[in-house]
Image (cartoon, rainbow, N blue to C red; front, side):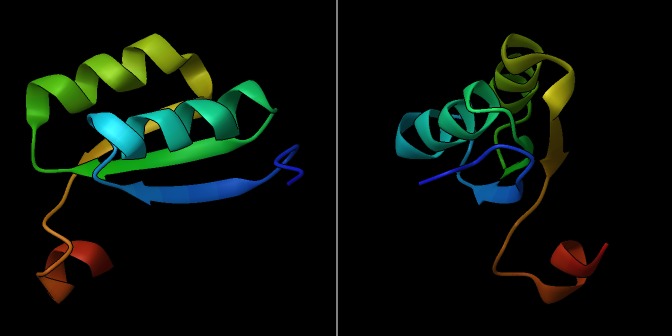
Length: 68
């Protein structure tokens, strides 16, 4: 899969498979928004991935939070 110049939203991105997916997108040249409830882990993941990643505290079961 080609992620170069892709823009992705990854849920559960503070750890595990979500974090690995976000890293794959960034390392392939894309940008990613990390959605998760874990503030500290999410911020750490975004910092580790650099300027191509941003963390957003979000409960994806809450439509208003996703819209925001």
